[in-house]
Length: 338
Image (tube, rainbow, N blue to C red; front, side, top):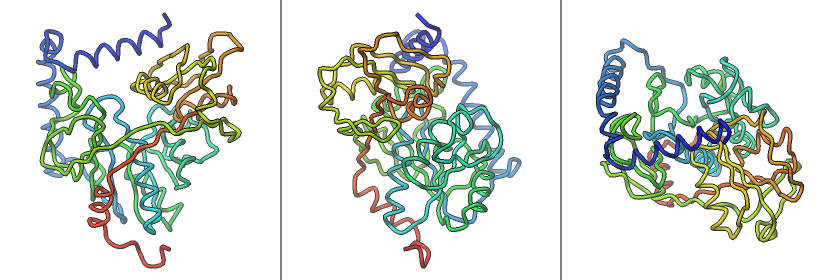
């Protein structure tokens, strides 16, 4: 087994531990208590002004999660950006740019390199057409974006519920189908911070997580087509019966493989890799009879070397009532936005 495969297997085992309160989780409980104490102290320092919170001159919507691992934030960010665009807003997106090799504040351009800006920001830039900037300090990324694109009148922050240095107007918390797991903090459970906590909305692919915030189910499914680096579309139905090598370098690779099967595909090879895997040192097993199929997030890196790899877009469906509530909480788009 490769080191990448071992890491993916280790992550999967840890997630299984987090679903219950068995001996392994209980052994980690003292560390979870320490984690909780440090979180409480950090929030207190922000409340008292010891650590500064910076406000930007436009509304800010933060989309994040309270669980470790993938929750499906990026598809929700894309859905929000497209909705805001349809309502006359001119949104921009800010992100930390996890997994990038750079540390400065910079734009993620549609024709850019994921190694420099991160795979998720690059995917958002390509899929939405909105300006995207990355920076460890999200407020700095936001100011740089607004300086470069003064027409932007609202910002969506991809991840950042725990980034208290950025003031926000609205918060959206996303849960995958595992919910809150055993309800314990890291490392005894999957929670980055205690739940429930105040957010404006919670979106969940599995059971409702509980808490006072309005909660809406989200549905995830793959599109009925795949696309290669040249924009050539291939219907998934046309791939049924073909020899497929499915690869996913995301937090929960098995989710992608399951969604492929729901679309009627049966990959002969399913290779799960660590989240944000860069693919620079990766080579598929040599066999010209296989078609390589991947997620959109992986494609922004895979296409540098394998332009024929087929990426399958992930689509999320959000309840209209969620968008109604969002619109009601936002001011009207600035005059002249249309």
